[in-house]
Image 1 (cartoon, rainbow, N blue to C red):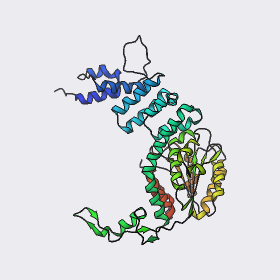
Image 2 (image 1 turned 180 degrees about the horizontal axis):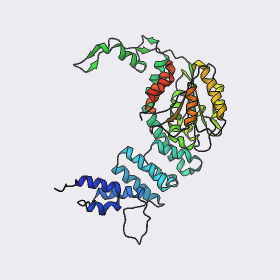
Image 3 (image 1 turned 90 degrees about the horizontal axis):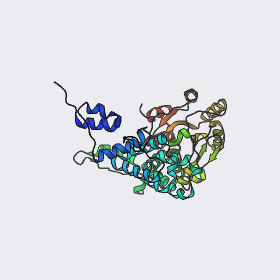
Image 4 (image 1 turned 180 degrees about the vertical axis):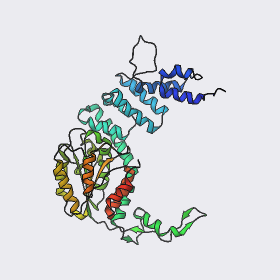
Length: 395
């Protein structure tokens, strides 16, 4: 008995495989696209089909984007109509990489149509010196939208994690909604869980002390701004700006390639300015940046050093290992984030990572969502290697 092929499955495969699959799918029961499916097919073809445009050739799936800004703007509108936000971000990134559409981002009308995301901010940072005046304000609006979205997701959690670690023994009798110690309050009131209401009825709510302690810890964020680290640079800079907003931390944000740029002043005022102060690309001299960062260490045991790099060192590797070894031995809480992004473990120098791990400096990838737990654990004095194991993304 011949098995009947599901028409919906054929339709999906046709959209995935493109025009060239039509004949094969017809032999399996036939598949025709109509209405919205045809427009979705054309939007995908513009990026994923490598068929050249030819006015004399038979009509193919490929719609092409050419060099027309209006055509690109329409295409951007189409993909936002037919696909979810996370899929739109992937397709836009592929469009830039596969079709060389970077130049078209210089058109304000086109940039307004793009879905703001971390990858797009990375592209705009890499083009910083080439963005024309007419597009700069639009580019800033796009970057601002991404910065605000990331801060909305991370700022409160980072603040609570840091203040919870620093003030864990200091509670105040003065109530304040913004100063609630949620972890302590929930932990102390778990016995008061009411199954009928499905919630905890606290006997007592604990509040952090309102006294602000200034510069309790020094936090240094040292960011590799080579092109391969784009997502990590964006997240690292935004998190650095959040650290800088806390009086209890003396924060320094450094970016490096073969030169070192101190972004501390910008991160304390406007993280968007800080991002536009970063130029992606170039070589890498990690040792030079670590040497610069050493001057900010006044109390090693109250210093958290977060190095964000894939460890491909173009400078003096032996001297780098020696510097970091001395830093860790002095009591600095030092760690290397091979990536601070949503994309999992990156390509990195495994040999150098092993050398640093042997010195007690864990090297691992971390997602932005797990960073608050990582920072809290580090400030509380948790074992960094165990902390890295818990914080690293699942493989």
